[in-house]
Each structure stands twice: as C-alpha cells, then as structure tokens.
View (cartoon, rainbow, N blue to C red):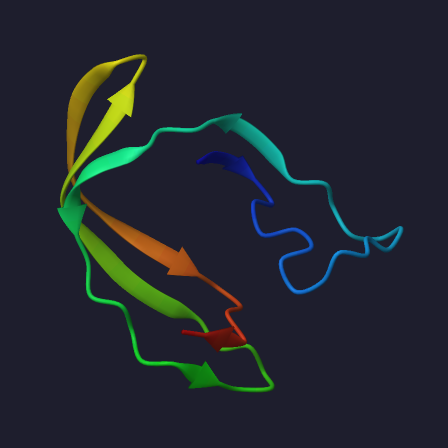
Length: 81
C-alpha cells in the first residue's frame, strides 16, 4: 500500500480524536520477492523493525512491475511476529 498513517488503529479498533485516519493512495499487490521476517519484539517502548524486500515485483493494473529491493520500516512495532 502507498499512503499515509497506514498503521492507524493497528493495535485496536477504537480511534481517539487525536489519532490520524489512514489514507491509502494505492494498493500494489506484491507478486514476487522475498524478505526475512525479523524476530518477535516485545518492547514497551515500541522499537522499530526494519527488513528489506528483495527482488520485488508488484501488480499495477494487471501488469507486473519490477521495483527491485526496498526497505520496509515499521517505526513503532511494539509486538511483531
């Protein structure tokens, strides 16, 4: 997905007045590629989890588009499995 605040309300289904709405500009299904799933993090301070999607190909309007390798970052993962 491409957009802003994509993880809004990821931990619960209640949105407080100060929480941003997620804004999805586009969704590109990944149809090829691989990444290493980081070990689970159990951190009350919500540490970041970073991995790299290697040799990624996405489907945009029915056409496969190679986007190469991209870094995926969740800046405040909390619990990641």
